Length: 117
Image (cartoon, rainbow, N blue to C red):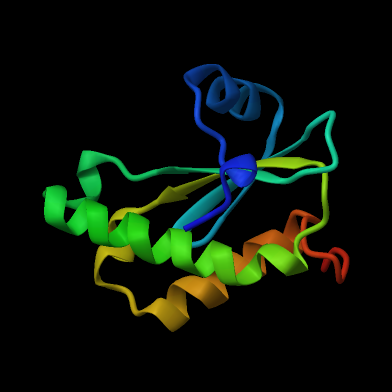
């Protein structure tokens, strides 16, 4: 589980990221990234009913959370992120989701390694 300080929890936080953030997408996930005023990167997750029934949505959310938890040390500080699952994510493997997230985070400049073109 992500530390409490690293979680984006409130509707207003999600709305701010959607309004001000930059989005990157693959066929499995979409990541919105926006700078925040702290040195901590906060992450929120969204899995809609399009992904499937409650069991599939909850499993998908757990996989996304675990993939992000493992990459937390590699993230630059000072960002708010919203990770949105697309329907194919329900049937994707952990390694596919993790690779997809890594690609998107690198593309958006949130990974410490820098931005790829």
